[in-house]
Amino acid sequence: MKKIGKTNTIMLIFAAFVLVCYLPYLCLVLVNGESFFACFIPFCVVAAASIPAFLFVKYRDRLNRFWRIVRIIYIAGMCFYAVTFTLFSAYIGVCSAIGADEAAQTFAEADGDGNGDIIIVFGCRTYGYTPGQQLRSRLDTAYKLLEALPESVCIVTGGEGENEGVAEAYSMCEYLVNKGIDRSRIYPEAYAKNTYENIEFSKAIIEEKRLEYDRVIGVSSDFHIPRVQYLFDYYELEADTVSAPSLDLWQFFMSNVREYMAYVKLFLVTGL
Image (spheres, rainbow, N blue to C red):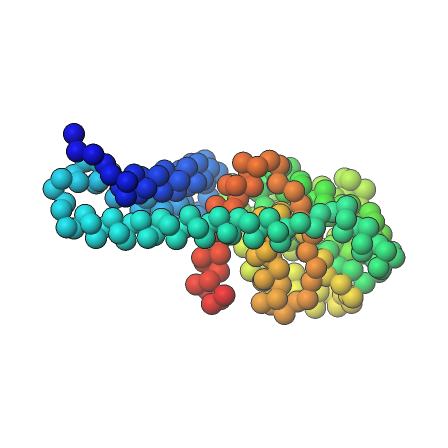
């Protein structure tokens, strides 16, 4: 049997790395019944990683020079992905370091009761009026801020996704009310379908309701914070951000996989 060789071994290792990242993610979006676009991207990544590896294992003796070209392109692409994904994950970790307890204390010391503060909470998966675990983490973080800043108000933003049954904003509002936050302090934004619209529509509520503010505070999951901060700047809404913790390292890793592709889309749409 012909030896694989060092270069081809490296190629297979990179293929395994990408498949470990994207096969679980693809299964997750399929199980959750997410949109075609959400499934299409990880499917393309899995295909791009696995098809050349399959061709190598099965037909490498017949491909000759053509295989050398494919191998060079493949290894270059896999190297680029592995390096940029690693750097991206480190960047996410650094940018999402400010949590609820530290932020609540800092803001309370600076602003007292929080008069003039608007807290924007970004939605995600709900099950009717029951927020998913990730969303509960965001809402619990927002609750700590609302308790520490009793004169602040809150915008909860998120429309009705596929298989959710109710707009995320309404589920988020009821969760905070059940924890003791006065309903008059909460402004639901129930139409946004993505992070762009979360900020755009929240800004529209601020203008429509003529909410005067000294500070805007965005609350989302740790992995989501850097993209949120960029889009605040993109929509010219000066804001601080506070991160809600991921449930565990696996969720953080899988969320980074998704965020990486979201940044690719962000680059294509906004020219980041």
